[in-house]
Image (cartoon, rainbow, N blue to C red; front, side):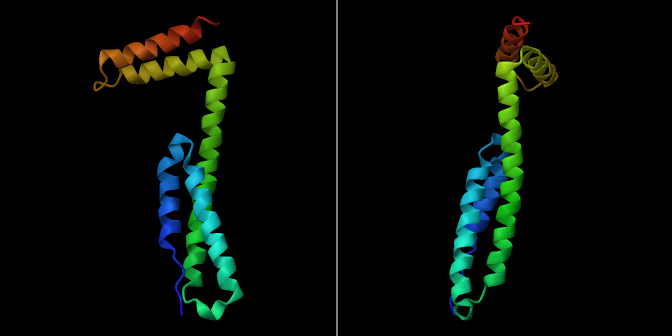
Length: 127
């Protein structure tokens, strides 16, 4: 009996979770989901030849959950970026809040704070 290789699917799913806040996690999750789906189709043709079909089904579920979460966060990131570039009021408020958070962070150097001040001033000047 052969074993389906679930490790790669799990690694891609975890990479998807880890990269989801960057908006690119869905890429890894989608690859993992497609690999799991392909392996399951192959296993369903000859189920007696494979011993861990249920493990691959679990890996596919993890990949699907990672894909959904990463996709939703990716859409949110796209929404925020579009709003910053198309809505001056949103951009001004966004950079004001970012500046407040940065100023309250003692680990940020003045150059970092200055960057956010410049972004805020630039965005709010468009109002």
